[in-house]
Image 1: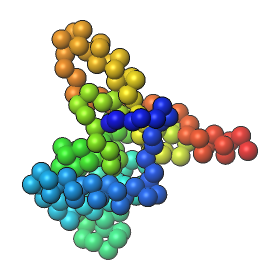
Image 2: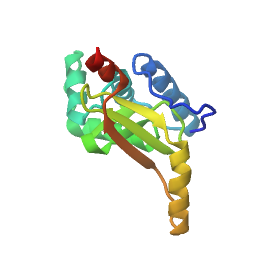
Image 3: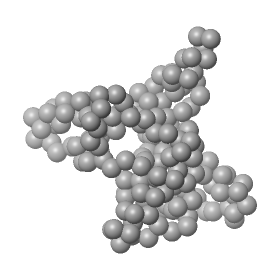
Length: 164
C-alpha cells in the first residue's frame, strides 16, 4: 500500500463497490481465477456496507434481494476466495468481513478504525507502523505476512453528532 500523502486513506463505502468489483474482475482475469456470480455478489455486498458483515448477514442480504438462500458453506467459500485474493479482509474482533479495493504488499500494515457507536469500519494507512513492526519481526528473524491492527473508538461522524 504505497501512499504519498501523510493523511490516512479511508474506504468510501458509498462509492467503493464499483472500484472493488472492477479491481476484482481485473485481478481475477490477470491471475486466471474465476469471479463467480456468488463471489461477485458477496464482494458487492461487502463494498456497499459501511459496517463489516458476517457470513450470516451476507446470507440474509442475498436472500432478501430475491435470490435463493445460499448455504453457509457457499458464502464461506466465496469469502475464503476473496480473502485469498486480497479482495476482502476479516475483522477478527467482529468475526466479520470488509471489501478491499487496495493493493497491499506482504509487509504492509492494514489499520482498521472500528466505531463502537455506529459500527462503521474504515481502513487507514499503517505505513509508519508497518516499518516499526517489520523491524521488530526482523530482529527476531521472523518474516511478517498480513499485518492487521484494529483500533476501536468513535468515528468522526459520531463524534460530531455527540458534540452537536
